[in-house]
Length: 501
Image 1 (cartoon, rainbow, N blue to C red):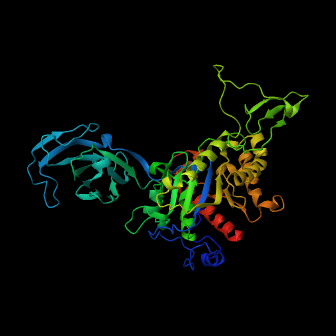
Image 2: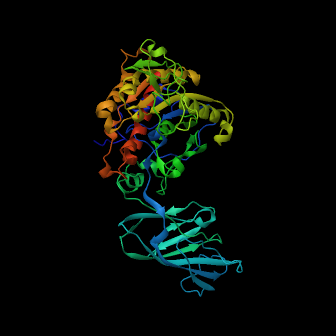
Image 3: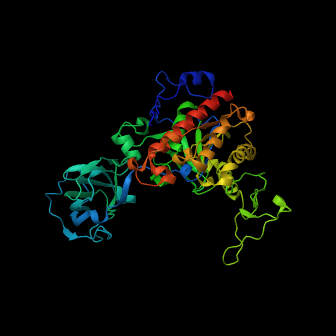
């Protein structure tokens, strides 16, 4: 069942603002998430760093648009016309006589003529999509983005030199050719470009631009909003930007950082750094096994403790868990260079390297220092086996304690979301979900009361029929799932920060 992410919180933001001095004063009667105001954070205050960890769904697999592809064969018989003189906004290039015209290849390279230094290039032809839908177009790259694209006389793209590009969605009927005109504003003539559909169910574009969900994600000019008070950085890929829908995965998909970061930016006065350090296809029982985890024996097998390999080996009945592991080699006899917890080590090292060079990765940083303000965890799919599921709760407890120790943040709050989606209601997925939700049980884990919170995200599962694609292990790449999980984690963190004071 879908919930309204804007109004579902039971507490008033004004209450938080009064209770927590580091929280911004927010007009909170309706508990809305506001559009970013475009103002940078106060760089005289320490940066509040939130560490995001998990596996591929934390990496971010919610599609922004669907069917994104190069124009390619959608262009029919494009013709390049060259006009003398640099581009003029007052010139009518449909009436002017070109210096030359030539058919160009759809996949070829278009170039301005070298012998005519001052010239304007216009490409005309027809464009034909296979499927009816609403489309956005992105001509060229680099300097070639400085162009104007019209379809059937309607301007659908414009980017002038020194300005941001403006895109307008256009509905195309599948199988029907439409005349197009692509006018280059400089001599950087780049062949073709890319298109994407904005009305595919479950994509962020459809949710925001068509269904009018999450209005805080668009600015007043219908472009993706940018938070200048929140910076997003991926410690593994070493890429960062002010938080927006296009920050993650080279702008192709979103993860929980989008919803989470918007809430933190709204509630916290200090600069916020959302620091993600994770990779996909990793299990807590093996790859992410935290330091201090001991090996154990079960059903005649020994399972590796932190730093050990292989993952599992036969137990000597007389020795049990004390059975030493055999050499671990691949099919060619070469030692396998991996061990239990290595991904934990790598993620920690990547994040610490980023924090050690904060002035380089965070453009607005003034050397004022930082604080690990919280941890966020979303994972579980890879541990769906009898042994790893049964040990998940203890491994999660160890993880929370180890992260706080290794980041020297013993009191940092820890928010997590159930990480098995629809499978989290049955079999090993259910077992893992229950282990994660057990973090909320003060009778079982009294040390976590008020500083650890798990949100049940299973209701945010969306079926493939209303999603960009059928890919269950990535929540069918439905952007609504990823935004909702991020918002839930944000509100959970807000609760923990309030309780911390």
